[in-house]
Image (cartoon, rainbow, N blue to C red; front, side):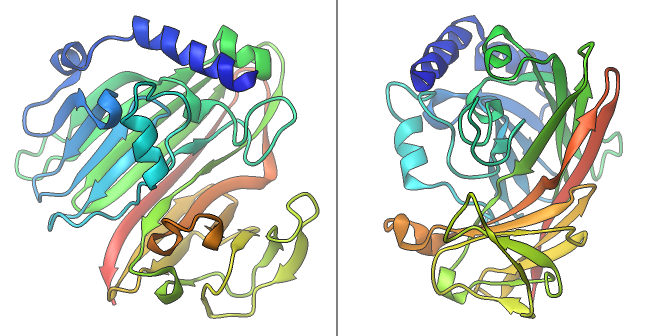
Length: 319
């Protein structure tokens, strides 16, 4: 029933949403920001830096669907099943699986809403776009807004506002997330940026920077995960992996097996999640690894009028 409601809500929102052309006329910045019909025809914002790097953000789900280096090399991964849905006659029938989708206001399963919350299943709105005034090195940016609706309040009975800014600083991708309580009562939430990174082969991938941390191993029993301590300098993959690293440091990296690594730098996200479905997704598991900045082990509590803010950055470095 929830899936049917989601599809109907998304369809109704699509009927009300401005076209990509109208949005581009209002928010486009020649050479730096363009709104176009992206995957599945969904309105998408493309940011282009003077160095040649680019990023694309789909308004459906507020999902970053592409992050390319100046060379044209893609950093993120889109699952084949996501592409099939986006290219179907019902592109909003399920969330986008790939890129950097949102988990909000719930990371993981919930009895009251769909897996990982509703933010990835609804349309976000463009609040503003900008480009740094320096003419030789302008940093393009878009800020998206998500607010409560009748649809969201049926699952999560609170008024809120999320502002999500996505920007390019050279070949570095930056996001800034702010969650505000606009209700007259307090609420708690968890969240994550569910980042899919393209790798040469999952068996060649390595994660560094998590040694010494306690983590929840959810591979056997997600509802009752085993608590362990990471003793490896390099985390490698030989089977399904679903680990939540608690009180993580603000820097870690994923060696993608090509002689390069994707670096993860964050501020005010408490945890890092490392996930590989292994052969549960036989068509694509070798091509990606998920490494996620998350606020899971310590749910955020906001009183009316309070806000929470966190940032994350991704870059590619040669090894």
